[in-house]
Each structure stands twice: as structure tokens, then as C-alpha cells.
Image 1 (tube, helix red, strand yellow):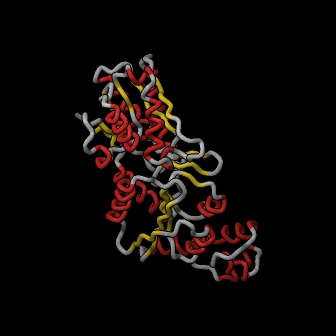
Image 2: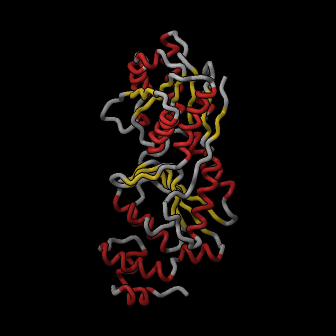
Image 3: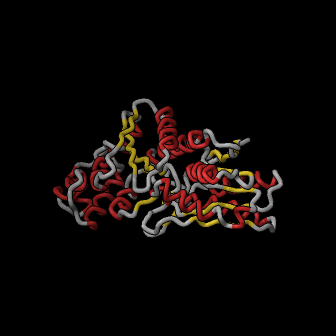
Length: 332
């Protein structure tokens, strides 16, 4: 049974006006806000009551700092969510500059049952605090605050699949391209690739590509800046004599081919890419193999997990809600 504003105020030890400000997104001291939210959580928020009644409900989509710059990947995930959404549930695309207090207020009023976040990083302390009180799910690997990373487990496995593919094709002098990225999963792919070589007691050269220090990851670089980094990188002796190359991201792969074509030289060895974005691979020859990280399946599993959390089931203790299931797509 829902509590009245006065009953909430009495239990929280605050005034009814303070409860009203919390529910409507007004400014309230952190201690009083936590007291009100604690009472609401114990009694069950309006959003959760609505979900249990299986009536109409809204899920918000929030694009945070460092959102994916691959339109195909984003659209694939959102399309999968739309197709799997229960009847009478709606998706709301929220403005990226929405105040965290407004998110919290909409949830408390029953206007927002949960959140779907797309992006790789947030250091907004107010948003981090609000997310503690709102059922939510991330669609990708991400970094919270000063360094708390959550990496989808399939990223490391993608690197290992790439290494095994090269082993199967007798590649023993392999190079992995490494570059600063907003996506925490990028480094995990590199490490998974290197681990497979270490386990076989084989050497693997990690080719570091340097981008301008002012850029926050290569996703923020234009093509020219990435190509300049590649121009320097492919002059490395290890690259020139490589028989296998792993590029952990499709855009990086496409730009590598462009640089090589401009030089009039084919890739020195067999190439494996990652993310399987056909738009980037069109026209590349020889067409590289690619690791498909199954964005559609990932989004469907993420939605299922979010609905589970909205229903009141506690989240997993390890904070890993979705495991990517990567698969290799053969090249030429």
C-alpha cells in the first residue's frame, strides 16, 4: 500500500515539503534526500508498483559521455530492445543533459520504471548517486567515477578467438594494434589476444599507436589523426615482418587498409578485426576475418536483466549482467 507524503515525511524525519521536493526533482540536502529515498525504497517505489501490476510503463534511454560512435551498433541494439519490449511498455529517448535529480524524480513518480544507458564513461557524481536508486543496465563496457570498470566478459574472449584463428592459419609472428580508447573493452580484447600467445609461450608484439594527448580516446579523433598514428606504426619492423595482425576495432581496420592502399602495399599478413561492422569492411581486400560481438543478443539479454531488476530481484553481486557471446566471421 502506497504511503502518503505525510507518512513518508514522518518515517524519514523530514517535512512534507522536503518529501515533495525529492519526488519532484527539487534541491534537497544529501542526508535528507537519502532518508526520504530509504523510506520510499522500503515501501516500494511507484515505478516498481506499476511494473508489478504489468500496466503501461516507460524505460528511458540515456546516451552518456563517450557513447558509441558506430551508428550501426547503436541502432542494432535499440532495434533489438524495441522488438523484445513487453506490450504497453515504451522507450523514451532522454536528453543527454537531463539533470540526475529529474531522472530520480521521474522514477519516484512512476513515470520512469528504469534506465538503459549507452556509453562508456561517467564521472558525474550526481548521476552515479541517482543510478543507485533507479533500476538500470548498461549496453556496453563502462567506467564509473575515478576508475571502477565493468567490462563485458566476451571482450577478452574475442581477443582469444582472434589469436586462435591466427594459430589455425600457421601465423606465429603476430602483431596486435593498441590505441587509447574510451571503451574499456578495447584493452580487454588486446589482453585476451596476448594471453593466448603467452599460454603457448610464443611472442606477440603489441604495436602502440600514438594519438594526440588532447584526445580522449581514438573515437574522438578524426580519420586523419588515426591515419597519422597508423603511418608511424606500420613502419615498425615487427609490423613489416608480421604474418598475422589483430585490429580490435572495425574503424581502425578500415583506416589501416586505407593507409596501406595509399602506400601501394598489401597487408603483410592475415588480418582479424573485431565488432563485425560490414559497412566498414565493404571493399577491403583481402577481406579480413572479424569477431562478431553479437550486439543484438547483448541488447536482448540486457533488457531481460533490466526487467528482472525492475521487478524487485536483486542485481548480481559481481555487477556483470550480460556476457557477450563472440563468434568469428571468416574473411577471404
